Length: 105
Image 1 (cartoon, helix red, strand yellow):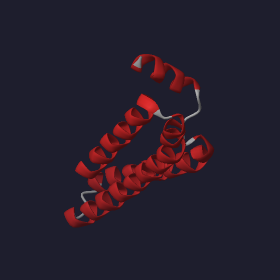
Image 2 (cartoon, one colour):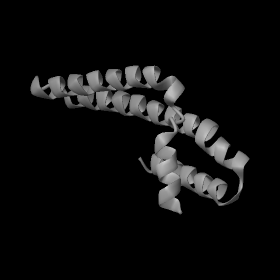
Image 3 (cartoon, one colour):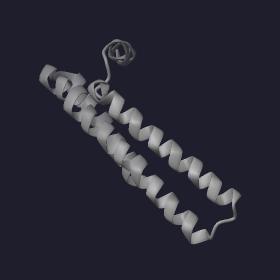
């Protein structure tokens, strides 16, 4: 049954669908930050300067993750809770696991 739910979910647009352009823009910015990090290392820049930029890049990526999580909760989890039953419990558990993974990073 779980495979069927994932198959059905694959056909529905993801929760972030309406924010896709903004998320892609933020990811491209993070990509640029990573390229900047590579450049800093190639240029033998001071360790603390590189670490500062690593921290900024990490924060930017975490902000994308939080936005995706908010979209998931507001769309996918909300729909599942409205439907009720096992699907609702599964989506809440899935979201809790995603939050736990984000907190471990």
